[in-house]
Image 1 (cartoon, rainbow, N blue to C red):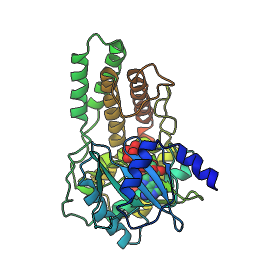
Image 2: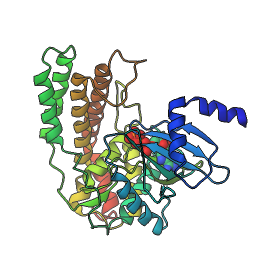
Image 3: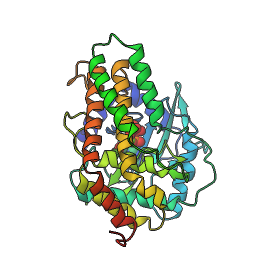
Length: 363
Ligand SMILES: Nc1ncnc2c1ncn2[C@@H]1O[C@H](COP(=O)(O)OP(=O)(O)OP(=O)(O)O)[C@@H](O)[C@H]1O
Ligand SMILES: [Mg+2]
């Protein structure tokens, strides 16, 4: 037991352990060990063990996030809990603060939900479970129209990301990856031009980043809840679901040279989502989901392609790629390939939507 704890502790730098210890002193619970929870790319996430109960999760927020995201998280998760949904909750300090500032960073503690996340789904059953978790979340928050304390600007805006890609091409004409990025940019631009804009509204309370690693499953594979609640916002549901399906239905690694859109995963995800959201989505919303998913793939491809020229991204694998640029190029190609595969199957995907959102009344 002791050696297991030491092994886990050793994964964390002395500096991080010291900072975490200082932060945890502000809280009214006893803890005995820390381990690093990998899976997230943005925040630093530590699992905090206590003698009794499932313990806590301690996070050092990435500076991209305003400390006010904790206020959103606190309000929304309390509402979810009030309705009986499983959810992490924000734990206040002894002084009742939502977070602890330390050395220029913001730290917060969440209740730990006993479950695990995955980086990719291995079967359609998982997609059905994920769809049900997200559907339950949207349905529970459907009547939340009051503005959140912290307003997040819209993240999904394909035209803006395409313009940024054009800007990157103009700024880096001599970049070694320029010819490959131009080829991708042409394909992305052509395909986006053929897709309709998603319906502007209604504004719903959305998670903002429902990729598969932000869902927790229990040991039996049942869905528990969404985590990573820093991106909560009011916004259209089509890009939210498009972002979910692009992640859940492209089961290979995000940087694999080949990518496919798993239609059986999509069918299962829609079944799970529809099972929890009867009557929630209007026709313009559910009919926009196939084009919306294609658009999100292309938007992400544009972002990765721009990042390839600008050599930036939060995380990359030096073991497998020469530079950030190469890794981002692989990611851009992967998203484009998945978009193309979905385009080939668009009619079948639309038939799935009709079946689930019209109760089988239409052909
Ligand atoms: N309250 C919680 N209970 C249990 N596990 C959690 C909890 N919060 C986070 N996790 C686990 O830690 C991982 C990382 O957390 P989170 O997604 O919040 O970090 P992140 O860095 O913001 O991630 P991302 O890369 O998606 O932005 C999650 O994928 C999940 O496995
Ligand atoms: Mg996450």
